Picture 1 (cartoon, rainbow, N blue to C red):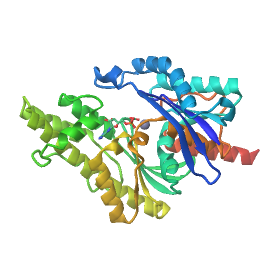
Picture 2: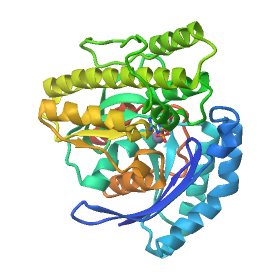
Picture 3: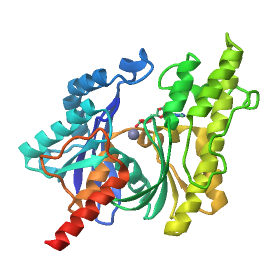
Picture 4: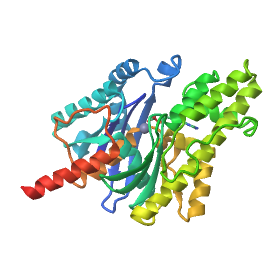
Length: 357
Ligand code: KG4
Ligand code: ZN
């Protein structure tokens, strides 16, 4: 089975072709990502209107490139998948409408993939990870701990009450005059900083529910920076190191609570899976590895280019759904908001309706 996948929910215009074999293994035939980072850098964050226009301009060419690199014709494709949300609605409309047009013209099934589901299933493309596993999804827009029990069967165990972790990295970078996206910049600065110079809080530490809250940390960092303004290069490095260490401690503690809850409700997970752009952070990866070892499971973290937004994860999620016959009509609507566990609810309702019929 071969599926074309399209991703346009944020600031990456991406398309990929992925093959799924009968034994459930996957292979990436092509994976083309065009980052819009330069378009948004001057604004210190993604500007939705600029993103949507850039997707319109780039997408056709990116799809053609992905098809060419996969050495694939549309005859060989079994389905067209696109991220149907959640995300910036302008971009989602561009990607999903393009997928609908191709599906209509080439007479192929359409799969509207939830972007979060695609992050969640990437570990099955890269490592063939069996269900159920515990997912830690941390990106610029999301911070969630999820029990992944099957395709379309997700239970959210914890989430953030305010900022996403990636967002906290981005805001910290902006505050300290570093570039965008902030994660890699803060990580680089932190390497030459002293993580113990500033005393920063570890919000939610020790709580039983595996939720996050990061706005207090952000405020504490801002107050420390204001106290010593104007900040020197060394101050910036120390603030970054302190911030990153606080995040590492928070992630460790909250994930430990998440894994505990997972065990109570669903038994032993096959793995702890990390996904989303924040999973690219080496200190966070090391902490997750330590935690996985401590609780007797293994950490699976996809390669960096599959952690951040890409088309291969959409194509793969498309394969996983298509093989189960889960396709969408051409009427399916793009969605700005689309919680992961709502997929499960919707499918439960569909099954119930089918049984009733
Ligand atoms: O998953 P992603 O590419 O896009 C979405 O938000 O969906 O994640 C991007 C986020 C940004 O907030 C970025 O600052 C963060 O991931 N990020 C990092 C690192 N690399 C990217 N955060 C911390 N450390 C990094 N090395
Ligand atoms: Zn993402």
